Image (cartoon, rainbow, N blue to C red; front, side, top):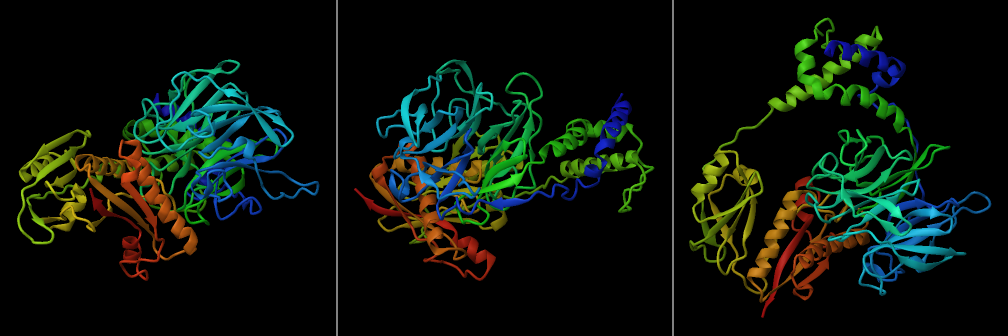
Length: 563
């Protein structure tokens, strides 16, 4: 049976052999161009093309926004002149509020759907309908969408090309961690189904954002930071594997658009010319620029469907039951004699990759025994430990031996050391073990006391949290503020000195603001947390070394006062 499957795979691959030869390289020589006349020093995100060929998009932190320079997004628009050149973007105030505004699409030439974050300008949180009158838009109504509720700051979404589905990203009921992707289907004019989570095939405990659907509703494009921790978000695609919305193929990255920056909002908008839009922070520290690319994904998806979806899931069986020793995989020949040999060679390379990954499991041991000291007096102080196991359950103890036992049972993820009257410290178990020290120093809670929140990580060039561990650490910070209700703090963001100083200052402020925003959502009084952004003006290490730059990219927490 498996052998027959392999033969069928080889037959299917024959028509795409030029692509198959180049899977390890890049055969998709697509031209990526920046829409320079639309981009600014602010944050351009979420482009949507109207039925008239205009590009509507959100611009964040522009001082001209209705909410000023802290406004996460107003709607702007650009259109082409009679000569075919993009004119200066126009601020569409009639579609904007002083909160976060995202345009999802156009059901027809005179109608638009726009998300507003709510509580501002008298409009509640939700997706709202507008009617066009020239360049102005008249408010119509809010769309009814069951139990729609965005519990976070981020929102992105799009109306499908057939107007039957709205796909969206937000933190809501049933989210696995941060933002997840949801689907809502049209019931009747103005009424939509409650958002349905797309499930674990697509969503993770990290961030899945800016989704779009192909015209036939069979392919999803979205951005996520779940693939490469520490880098920016990448664009992924996946195929529906059934009629339901929670059954998808394994997401695969679109390497032709992904960089070390953050790529979002990939959407195919011109099927005739095969064009797609997306945004990237690669050339703009912290902020997105609008980009255009020739969309040539269909051929790639076909090859991956043949060589990944149908093969990788049966990797072990294939390796056991099919004899592929006739191909000398140690010879890296530039010409492969037959289509069959080429396909099997690709299979063998993928099999070896999977096998190696499964076998490389590090084994580490440590005694994890330590004492806790007052950072000022160096006196030994009593303490408590709260630690998280691999399943996410928290346990409390005052005996470090419990940490040792948990680690040796491969159940220890991270731990927090706290003492009454002191600022607690968070540790990732593997990082602590690597340091090889046996004392932990805690700072007393006093005005002016300062610690670096070095375990809260952001994606490169963005104010987006990098991983689930960062969210857990933020929760610990929230707990600290709730246990010490008289404490007021200041969060100060810092960057290294690379790039534009003004953009660095804005990025550092955005990161501090992102932490405060999370704490506020979790119940900490807004007035108890002040923020500042210093960019690269206050380094604590040498910016001429990579290690020094890493240390300089930080957020510090300072005890501002105790009531």
